[in-house]
Image 1 (cartoon, rainbow, N blue to C red):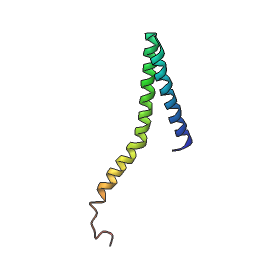
Image 2: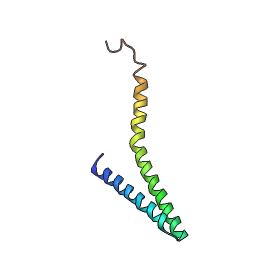
Image 3: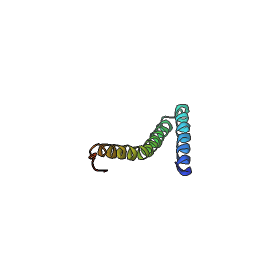
Image 4: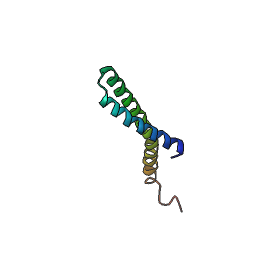
Amino acid sequence: MNTLDQAFHVLGSLLLISLAVLSLRVQCQRLKLTFTRAFVAVLLVLLADAAMHLLPDAIACFIYGTQKHYVSTNFYE
């Protein structure tokens, strides 16, 4: 992971924590709804970023892992 991606994860995590605390502390229903929606939006963005990191590796492992079993043993000789 490069430094920009690490900074994105750290800022997203801090934003999640602060939005969670604010949504618990605020009494106004409109602000509570706004903070909750912002929390869900930030959480979805972080989950999408994690999926973009994990899914391509998992798919490639699956594709190349299944192909190596179908190679004939005399192919390399």
